[in-house]
Length: 353
Image (cartoon, rainbow, N blue to C red; front, side, top):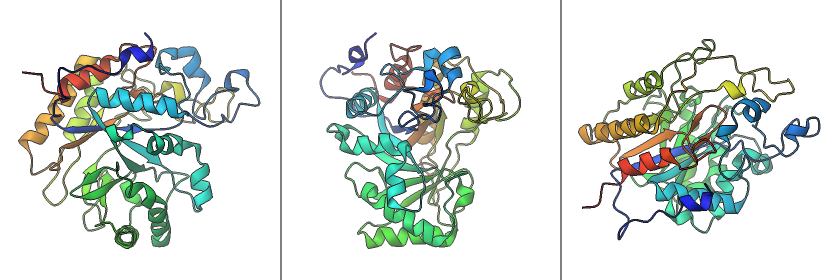
């Protein structure tokens, strides 16, 4: 099925009001030049995070627009697809570097920069997921301050997602946060004319440090537990057990779209483009029906526990396009009819009377 056949979605009359603002993480490993491009024929035109195992064993994960997403046309198509099916925002991965040039040159920021240029970006919101993990750790208050300065053009963008009137920033590794650093972020926001920043911790992150909300990126039982096949329902339940907040630190529930990281497993230095990840559990039996039920329960949890959730009823899905890790709801060659997006739309938009 051609991508154009999936959009736009026709609603009878005006688009109904969504039951919640459900977004998705957007990982951009699908731009730039592959490190093996000059050595291996399969990698010649490959984006940075494609592996040969993905091509050979998991070709069904290729998006309908191809492995590369680094054009404005493709971003516009993704925005329309996402918005038509009830997705309210993308949370783009952002990576720390100590100079503006290095930040600008990072291929993993391609999707976010295309989004802010897209003429149809008024259909969605966006926010930052600060990927402060190995290789991109923000260390020390002054580096947090500098990072905040790099963020300001995004945080002040009219389509940036807000919580309680403040732009939302999600911190991937909450353990990397420090009070002086997060205080510096708030200081820079106020200097820029913002009322402050809502800062969500992925995992445990105390309000005393400066985290205003909690969420997750994902929760993966058996992350390096050996190549064992498990039921998708197991990882769904692991996420649902983590939905808990409190009035002073509301929860943005995280949902799982899938997990099967086998395409990236294998030595990082070999000729197959592996990431160096050790084999772990994988959960290959997901279905659109299971995903729809998962989204339904998240919305019902927010409805039943308003004191634990945000007033905006925010939730976030892992992920839009983590094709290497098996966490994706974007349409692919294996899902050309966008069944996962249609499942989302059926839950988020109430049925017309």
